[in-house]
View (spheres, rainbow, N blue to C red):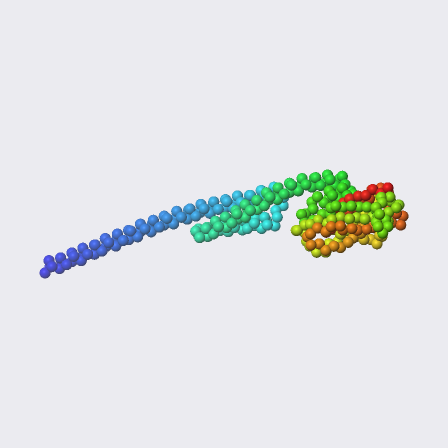
Length: 299
Protein backbone atom coordinates (compact mmCIF):
# COMPACT_ATOMS: atom_id res chain seq x y z
CA UNK A 1 0.00 0.00 0.00
CA UNK A 2 2.83 2.30 0.91
CA UNK A 3 4.66 1.45 -2.31
CA UNK A 4 1.53 2.25 -4.32
CA UNK A 5 1.15 5.66 -2.66
CA UNK A 6 4.87 6.33 -3.17
CA UNK A 7 4.57 5.52 -6.87
CA UNK A 8 1.59 7.85 -7.23
CA UNK A 9 3.52 10.59 -5.43
CA UNK A 10 6.49 10.18 -7.73
CA UNK A 11 4.20 10.34 -10.74
CA UNK A 12 2.73 13.65 -9.49
CA UNK A 13 6.19 15.10 -8.93
CA UNK A 14 7.23 14.00 -12.40
CA UNK A 15 4.18 15.63 -13.96
CA UNK A 16 4.81 18.85 -12.04
CA UNK A 17 8.46 18.80 -13.08
CA UNK A 18 7.47 18.44 -16.72
CA UNK A 19 4.95 21.25 -16.42
CA UNK A 20 7.52 23.50 -14.77
CA UNK A 21 10.04 22.65 -17.48
CA UNK A 22 7.52 23.50 -20.21
CA UNK A 23 6.57 26.75 -18.48
CA UNK A 24 10.23 27.64 -18.11
CA UNK A 25 10.76 27.04 -21.83
CA UNK A 26 7.77 29.18 -22.73
CA UNK A 27 8.85 31.99 -20.43
CA UNK A 28 12.39 31.78 -21.79
CA UNK A 29 11.14 32.02 -25.38
CA UNK A 30 8.89 34.98 -24.49
CA UNK A 31 11.80 36.73 -22.82
CA UNK A 32 13.93 36.10 -25.91
CA UNK A 33 11.23 37.49 -28.24
CA UNK A 34 10.71 40.49 -25.96
CA UNK A 35 14.45 41.20 -25.93
CA UNK A 36 14.58 40.88 -29.71
CA UNK A 37 11.58 43.23 -30.04
CA UNK A 38 13.20 45.71 -27.66
CA UNK A 39 16.45 45.55 -29.60
CA UNK A 40 14.55 46.07 -32.86
CA UNK A 41 12.64 49.00 -31.36
CA UNK A 42 15.87 50.57 -30.13
CA UNK A 43 17.45 50.14 -33.58
CA UNK A 44 14.41 51.65 -35.29
CA UNK A 45 14.36 54.57 -32.83
CA UNK A 46 18.05 55.17 -33.44
CA UNK A 47 17.47 55.07 -37.21
CA UNK A 48 14.53 57.49 -36.89
CA UNK A 49 16.75 59.83 -34.88
CA UNK A 50 19.39 59.68 -37.63
CA UNK A 51 16.74 60.43 -40.25
CA UNK A 52 15.42 63.28 -38.11
CA UNK A 53 18.90 64.82 -37.97
CA UNK A 54 19.34 64.34 -41.72
CA UNK A 55 15.97 66.01 -42.30
CA UNK A 56 16.98 68.98 -40.14
CA UNK A 57 20.24 69.27 -42.09
CA UNK A 58 18.41 69.21 -45.42
CA UNK A 59 16.05 71.92 -44.21
CA UNK A 60 19.06 74.06 -43.23
CA UNK A 61 20.54 73.51 -46.69
CA UNK A 62 17.27 74.50 -48.39
CA UNK A 63 17.10 77.60 -46.21
CA UNK A 64 20.66 78.43 -47.26
CA UNK A 65 19.64 78.17 -50.92
CA UNK A 66 16.86 80.70 -50.36
CA UNK A 67 19.30 83.01 -48.60
CA UNK A 68 21.58 82.64 -51.63
CA UNK A 69 18.75 83.76 -53.89
CA UNK A 70 18.26 86.74 -51.59
CA UNK A 71 21.92 87.74 -51.98
CA UNK A 72 21.86 87.33 -55.77
CA UNK A 73 18.53 88.99 -56.43
CA UNK A 74 18.15 91.58 -53.72
CA UNK A 75 15.26 91.69 -51.26
CA UNK A 76 13.14 88.53 -51.16
CA UNK A 77 9.79 88.71 -52.83
CA UNK A 78 6.67 87.97 -50.78
CA UNK A 79 6.50 84.48 -52.31
CA UNK A 80 10.08 83.68 -51.31
CA UNK A 81 9.64 85.08 -47.82
CA UNK A 82 6.49 82.99 -47.29
CA UNK A 83 8.36 79.85 -48.39
CA UNK A 84 11.24 80.71 -46.09
CA UNK A 85 8.87 80.99 -43.14
CA UNK A 86 7.34 77.60 -44.01
CA UNK A 87 10.79 76.03 -43.88
CA UNK A 88 11.50 77.58 -40.47
CA UNK A 89 8.13 76.37 -39.15
CA UNK A 90 8.75 72.83 -40.42
CA UNK A 91 12.23 72.80 -38.91
CA UNK A 92 10.83 73.89 -35.53
CA UNK A 93 8.31 71.05 -35.72
CA UNK A 94 11.06 68.56 -36.60
CA UNK A 95 12.99 69.63 -33.49
CA UNK A 96 10.00 68.41 -31.38
CA UNK A 97 9.91 65.06 -33.20
CA UNK A 98 9.69 62.08 -30.79
CA UNK A 99 10.07 59.07 -33.11
CA UNK A 100 6.77 58.63 -34.97
CA UNK A 101 7.63 56.93 -38.26
CA UNK A 102 4.41 58.16 -39.87
CA UNK A 103 5.20 61.73 -38.88
CA UNK A 104 8.72 61.41 -40.32
CA UNK A 105 7.25 60.29 -43.66
CA UNK A 106 5.01 63.37 -43.63
CA UNK A 107 8.07 65.56 -42.96
CA UNK A 108 9.77 63.97 -45.94
CA UNK A 109 6.78 64.70 -48.21
CA UNK A 110 6.76 68.34 -47.05
CA UNK A 111 10.50 68.68 -47.70
CA UNK A 112 10.09 67.24 -51.21
CA UNK A 113 7.31 69.73 -51.96
CA UNK A 114 9.50 72.56 -50.68
CA UNK A 115 12.44 71.43 -52.83
CA UNK A 116 10.14 71.33 -55.86
CA UNK A 117 8.97 74.89 -55.10
CA UNK A 118 12.57 76.03 -54.77
CA UNK A 119 13.51 74.47 -58.11
CA UNK A 120 10.57 76.26 -59.74
CA UNK A 121 11.47 79.56 -58.10
CA UNK A 122 15.16 79.22 -59.04
CA UNK A 123 14.15 78.64 -62.67
CA UNK A 124 11.91 81.70 -62.48
CA UNK A 125 14.75 83.85 -61.19
CA UNK A 126 17.08 82.54 -63.91
CA UNK A 127 14.46 83.45 -66.51
CA UNK A 128 13.92 86.87 -64.98
CA UNK A 129 17.66 87.47 -64.87
CA UNK A 130 17.92 86.65 -68.58
CA UNK A 131 14.99 88.94 -69.41
CA UNK A 132 16.47 91.67 -67.21
CA UNK A 133 19.79 91.44 -69.03
CA UNK A 134 18.01 91.65 -72.39
CA UNK A 135 15.93 94.62 -71.25
CA UNK A 136 19.04 96.35 -69.95
CA UNK A 137 20.63 95.99 -73.37
CA UNK A 138 17.48 97.22 -75.10
CA UNK A 139 17.21 100.11 -72.66
CA UNK A 140 20.78 101.13 -73.44
CA UNK A 141 20.00 101.04 -77.15
CA UNK A 142 16.79 103.03 -76.70
CA UNK A 143 18.55 105.50 -74.46
CA UNK A 144 21.16 106.03 -77.17
CA UNK A 145 18.44 106.56 -79.76
CA UNK A 146 16.63 108.96 -77.46
CA UNK A 147 19.66 111.20 -77.21
CA UNK A 148 19.59 111.53 -81.00
CA UNK A 149 15.95 112.53 -81.22
CA UNK A 150 13.73 115.10 -79.56
CA UNK A 151 10.94 112.56 -79.08
CA UNK A 152 7.66 112.04 -80.82
CA UNK A 153 5.73 115.30 -81.32
CA UNK A 154 3.77 117.15 -83.95
CA UNK A 155 6.94 118.22 -85.74
CA UNK A 156 8.18 114.65 -86.42
CA UNK A 157 9.37 114.13 -89.97
CA UNK A 158 8.16 111.18 -92.01
CA UNK A 159 11.52 109.42 -91.50
CA UNK A 160 11.17 109.56 -87.71
CA UNK A 161 7.59 108.34 -87.93
CA UNK A 162 8.62 105.38 -90.10
CA UNK A 163 11.31 104.48 -87.55
CA UNK A 164 8.79 104.64 -84.71
CA UNK A 165 6.39 102.36 -86.61
CA UNK A 166 8.80 99.56 -87.51
CA UNK A 167 7.32 97.63 -84.60
CA UNK A 168 3.81 97.73 -86.10
CA UNK A 169 1.84 94.50 -85.75
CA UNK A 170 0.82 92.34 -88.67
CA UNK A 171 -2.79 93.48 -88.39
CA UNK A 172 -1.90 97.07 -89.32
CA UNK A 173 -3.18 98.33 -92.65
CA UNK A 174 -0.98 99.90 -95.32
CA UNK A 175 -1.57 102.82 -97.67
CA UNK A 176 0.16 102.47 -101.03
CA UNK A 177 -0.04 103.92 -104.54
CA UNK A 178 0.01 107.28 -102.77
CA UNK A 179 -0.15 110.33 -105.01
CA UNK A 180 -0.10 113.93 -103.84
CA UNK A 181 -0.88 116.64 -106.37
CA UNK A 182 -1.84 120.27 -106.47
CA UNK A 183 -5.04 120.83 -108.46
CA UNK A 184 -7.24 123.72 -109.50
CA UNK A 185 -10.57 124.21 -111.18
CA UNK A 186 -13.52 121.85 -111.65
CA UNK A 187 -11.45 119.63 -113.92
CA UNK A 188 -8.77 119.44 -111.24
CA UNK A 189 -5.94 120.48 -113.48
CA UNK A 190 -2.63 119.44 -111.93
CA UNK A 191 -0.24 122.26 -111.01
CA UNK A 192 2.74 122.36 -108.68
CA UNK A 193 3.02 126.11 -108.27
CA UNK A 194 2.22 127.04 -104.70
CA UNK A 195 0.39 130.25 -105.57
CA UNK A 196 -1.63 128.67 -108.40
CA UNK A 197 -3.21 125.58 -106.87
CA UNK A 198 -6.55 125.59 -105.08
CA UNK A 199 -6.30 122.23 -103.33
CA UNK A 200 -3.89 119.50 -102.42
CA UNK A 201 -5.29 116.14 -103.53
CA UNK A 202 -4.07 113.03 -101.73
CA UNK A 203 -5.13 109.68 -103.25
CA UNK A 204 -4.12 106.18 -102.18
CA UNK A 205 -5.18 102.53 -101.92
CA UNK A 206 -5.92 100.94 -98.55
CA UNK A 207 -4.41 97.45 -98.37
CA UNK A 208 -6.13 94.12 -97.96
CA UNK A 209 -5.51 92.50 -94.56
CA UNK A 210 -7.47 89.37 -93.53
CA UNK A 211 -6.47 89.61 -89.85
CA UNK A 212 -7.28 93.29 -89.34
CA UNK A 213 -10.41 94.23 -87.45
CA UNK A 214 -13.17 95.06 -89.93
CA UNK A 215 -15.68 97.89 -89.61
CA UNK A 216 -15.60 101.67 -89.68
CA UNK A 217 -12.09 103.09 -90.00
CA UNK A 218 -11.20 106.73 -89.52
CA UNK A 219 -8.42 107.85 -91.85
CA UNK A 220 -6.44 110.88 -90.69
CA UNK A 221 -4.10 112.81 -92.98
CA UNK A 222 -1.47 115.23 -91.73
CA UNK A 223 0.07 117.73 -94.15
CA UNK A 224 3.27 119.18 -92.73
CA UNK A 225 4.47 122.33 -94.44
CA UNK A 226 8.07 123.29 -95.20
CA UNK A 227 8.16 125.21 -91.92
CA UNK A 228 7.40 122.00 -89.97
CA UNK A 229 3.88 123.07 -88.99
CA UNK A 230 0.81 120.92 -89.53
CA UNK A 231 -1.74 122.51 -91.86
CA UNK A 232 -5.13 122.69 -90.18
CA UNK A 233 -8.42 124.48 -90.59
CA UNK A 234 -7.86 126.03 -87.18
CA UNK A 235 -10.54 124.17 -85.25
CA UNK A 236 -8.13 122.07 -83.19
CA UNK A 237 -8.72 118.79 -85.01
CA UNK A 238 -6.94 116.01 -83.09
CA UNK A 239 -6.93 112.22 -82.92
CA UNK A 240 -5.74 109.83 -80.22
CA UNK A 241 -2.17 108.62 -80.64
CA UNK A 242 0.01 106.58 -78.26
CA UNK A 243 -1.66 107.79 -75.09
CA UNK A 244 -1.81 111.41 -76.27
CA UNK A 245 -3.17 113.22 -79.28
CA UNK A 246 -1.97 114.56 -82.63
CA UNK A 247 -3.28 117.35 -84.81
CA UNK A 248 -4.55 116.28 -88.23
CA UNK A 249 -5.26 118.16 -91.42
CA UNK A 250 -8.26 116.21 -92.73
CA UNK A 251 -10.11 112.97 -92.04
CA UNK A 252 -12.47 110.53 -93.69
CA UNK A 253 -14.39 107.45 -92.52
CA UNK A 254 -14.47 104.28 -94.62
CA UNK A 255 -16.12 100.90 -94.09
CA UNK A 256 -13.37 98.29 -94.12
CA UNK A 257 -14.17 94.62 -94.88
CA UNK A 258 -10.61 93.25 -94.98
CA UNK A 259 -10.40 93.91 -98.74
CA UNK A 260 -8.36 96.63 -100.41
CA UNK A 261 -10.10 99.93 -101.07
CA UNK A 262 -8.81 101.72 -104.14
CA UNK A 263 -8.79 105.39 -105.08
CA UNK A 264 -9.46 106.96 -101.72
CA UNK A 265 -9.00 110.69 -102.39
CA UNK A 266 -8.99 113.51 -99.85
CA UNK A 267 -8.73 117.24 -100.55
CA UNK A 268 -7.35 120.10 -98.55
CA UNK A 269 -8.09 123.66 -99.74
CA UNK A 270 -5.32 126.23 -100.03
CA UNK A 271 -4.90 128.55 -97.05
CA UNK A 272 -5.86 132.19 -97.47
CA UNK A 273 -2.26 133.14 -98.15
CA UNK A 274 -1.74 130.05 -100.43
CA UNK A 275 0.45 127.03 -99.84
CA UNK A 276 4.10 127.48 -98.96
CA UNK A 277 6.77 126.79 -101.49
CA UNK A 278 8.99 123.83 -100.71
CA UNK A 279 8.52 120.27 -99.50
CA UNK A 280 5.12 119.41 -98.00
CA UNK A 281 5.06 116.05 -96.23
CA UNK A 282 1.89 113.92 -96.11
CA UNK A 283 1.30 111.31 -93.37
CA UNK A 284 -1.66 108.90 -93.38
CA UNK A 285 -2.89 107.29 -90.11
CA UNK A 286 -5.39 104.53 -89.36
CA UNK A 287 -5.99 102.91 -85.94
CA UNK A 288 -3.39 105.18 -84.28
CA UNK A 289 -0.71 103.91 -86.67
CA UNK A 290 1.20 105.59 -89.47
CA UNK A 291 0.30 103.52 -92.57
CA UNK A 292 1.84 105.60 -95.35
CA UNK A 293 3.74 108.74 -96.19
CA UNK A 294 4.57 110.84 -99.23
CA UNK A 295 5.55 114.40 -100.15
CA UNK A 296 5.17 117.07 -102.77
CA UNK A 297 7.52 119.89 -103.70
CA UNK A 298 5.68 123.10 -104.50
CA UNK A 299 7.46 125.74 -106.52
